[in-house]
Amino acid sequence: MIGMDLSGQVAVVTGASGELGRVISRTLAKAGAAVALHYYKNEAKAKTVKEEIVAGGGRAIVVQADVSDKGSVFAMRDRVQDELGEADIIVNNAVHQYKWVSVLEQDEADYQSQFDTCVIHNLLMAKAFVPAMIAKEAGRVIAINTECTMQCKPNQSAYISGKAGQDRLLRVLAEEIGGHNITVNQVAPGWMISEKFRDEPADDSGYIKSVPLGRRGEDQDIANAVVFLASDMAQFISGCYLPVCGGNVMPRI
Image (tube, rainbow, N blue to C red):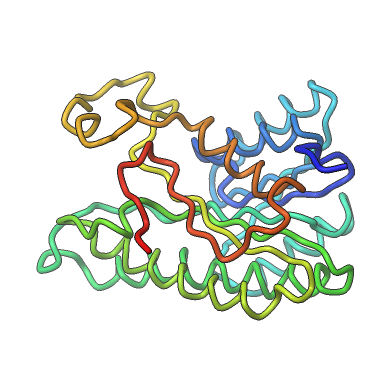
């Protein structure tokens, strides 16, 4: 039966200790998936999400890894397989935070960090988890991109350079593994409302004026799109860059 039920499936969410990652992880768990909650530094946040999922009757584990290091990612895969089983869904959400400044001011190291956490991150997750998906002829690869990749606004150069590279990597991957019933898609949020904004509101009136639907998206909107792409409802969607930003950017044909 086609639906949004992910019961019996295993999902791995990178950056699950972050604001968006926590909401994605909870939503996957509510849909029935067992969830491996990846973190890099913030173990406490990841453990809190695990406790919430378990309290709700779900299954979850917490696992640490550096998503730009092959040995670390493969060790994470091994632990997921040992404790939950082979992954059916991977959600590549982790990204390195840095200070946005102009091209002439941005340090070269910031470009490298974005390449590592956008391109290398997605590459290593594919190398670690996709072979098992190929073996069982089924799987979902989902990555978080951004509306910024289409906008090319000032001070975004390092971030969108990494995300543009991620986009091309994943489009090629979609071509290469589609024959194994594996879909590869990206969700591209706009300037969304997350836990931090709810605690510390900022003036978003200028941004909202540019959004056809007249509001900012919520973190839950992004998580809902992820669960949709992970589900049977999206079984014939692949190679997609899906903006979830109220129409603020619109891919052209």
